[in-house]
Length: 293
Image (cartoon, rainbow, N blue to C red; front, side, top):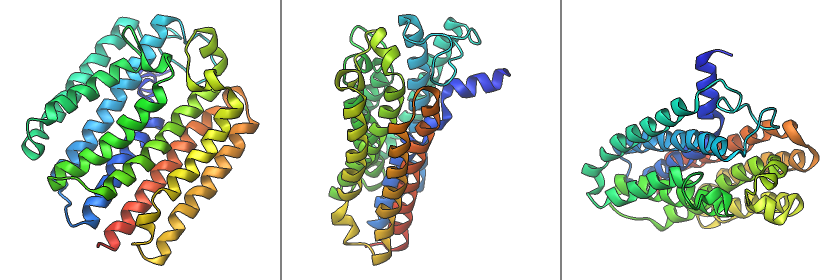
């Protein structure tokens, strides 16, 4: 396996739609409300991607250290577990990527003020605390809450803020929707890994409640996320109603595959859930850009 491919796999690029979608959706809201600013929006996009890659690297490293990931696992190949990457090398790259994310994040201070620093610190802590530390969130049933906050509420609202210099109730609505869709991406991952996670005493919500409940939650949260934006759909042209309908068709099809597959056959659904989320965010942004308030 080539070195570049090994590191691409470790970065888990297939999960990046989770971080990209929030920024794109926030850009759509800002454009809709005539508050769009290109430079801070692009900085937010770069920061979001780097923060997620940091979290992905940290997750792989600390899951390896805890013995959660094992060779031959049903999930995607883990370079450090399979011996493709040295653990200390991955650790150094993790913190190097985090440092780069912090440098990029500091570029937002001129647009949002120094009070963004504690927000950036919280995001940096989350990137590591999801898998590391004395109370890793993903091991204690809090991974879903963390994703809702740091891949939904935070990126959408703060990307909007650094563009507009203020807050928007519509951005808040969108942030909840994006956050719930992001939770579904995590749920697919944990649905697949439930047996390994239980053995490693990793108490994800799927381990706690079981696959049947998790499958139902996946379906319901997608529908709730789409309909949660009803106040916005009524303010957009009639054809925008096709956006949640298209998403729900894709979402339902992915859910059906989720509850009828096992093991490695679930791997494509991780990317499919992220794809559904990104398509939704892009189409929402397009509708808002084409038809500003």
